[in-house]
Length: 354
Image 1 (cartoon, one colour):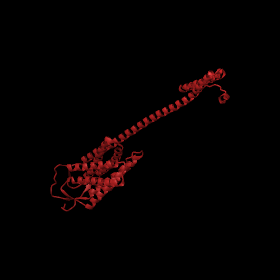
Image 2: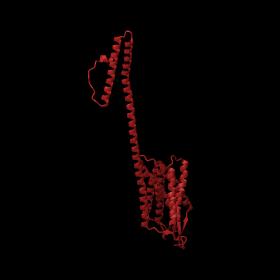
Image 3: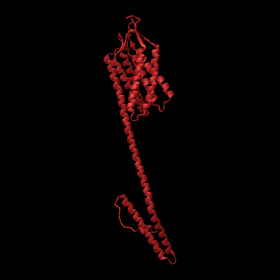
Image 4: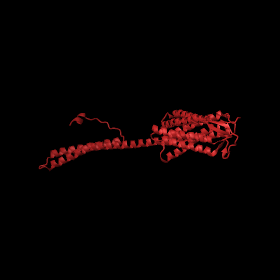
C-alpha cells in the first residue's frame, strides 16, 4: 500500500445494528427518565437526575464506541482508555444537562436553541474525543466540511431530542407508542450523526509505531459484551421508571381515597348539622307554645277574681303542645333506629283546621 493511499475501510454490519439498537434504547430511556425527573422533588429529584444522567450517558457513549469498534481497517486498532473514559464523562455531562433542561416548568424556544447548541457540541465532542482515543499505525485526516456537517447534525438532532423529551415528559395514557416512535426517530438521528462523523475521517498508512501505553484492544466478543451490559443498564433504568410510575399512581389513588373519606365525613357532619337544626326547629315550636300558654294561664289565675275558664284552656293547649313535642321526639327516635313507620287513620279536617 502506498504511503499516500487511503486505507480501505469497512463496517461489521452486526455491530452497526447493535449500535443503532442501543441508540434507540438510550433515546427511549431518555424520554422515560425526563418524566421521572420532572415529577420528582427534592433529594428524589437529585437521585433521578444523577442516575438518569449516568444511564443515559452510558447509552450514548456505548452507541458511539460500538459504532467505532464496528469500523474495520487493515491494521490493528487499540484505544487509549483514559481518553475513552473522558468521552464517557462527556456523554454523562450532556445527559445531565439535557435532563435538567427538559425538566424545567417551561422551555422557551430560546432555551431550546441554546440547549441544543450545548448538547450538540457535547455529543460531537464525545464522538471526536472517542476517535482521538484510537491508536494505530496510520495518520488520521478529517474532511472539515463533513466534520462541520456532523456537528450541525448533532445540534439539529439535539434540538429535536430536547423537544421530544419535553413533550413526552407528561406521562399520559397512550404515550407509550408515541415514546417508541420518538425513540426510533431520535436513535436513528444519533446514529446518522455518528456515522457522518466517521465518514469525515480517512486513514493513511504510517511507518511509525503507535504509542500503545494505557491502551486496550476490544474483540468482537468484547464489543457484544459492552452492548449487552449497556442494554441491561438501560433496561434497568426503564424498569425503575415503570416501577416508580406505578408507585406514584398508587400513592395518588390512596390520596384520592383519603380525600373521598374526608369528604364523606364532612358530608355526614353537614347532614347531622342540618338534621339537628331541623330537630331543634320542630321541638322549639311546641315548647315555645307550652311556655306561652303556661304564662297565659298564670296571668289568668293572677287576676282578681281568677279567670279559671281561660286558665284551663291555656293549660289544655300547653298539654297538647307538650304532647306534640313528645311525638316529634318519638318520630326522631324511630328514624334513628330505623323502626317501621306506624300507620294509623287521621282526620284530614283536623290537620288543616286552624
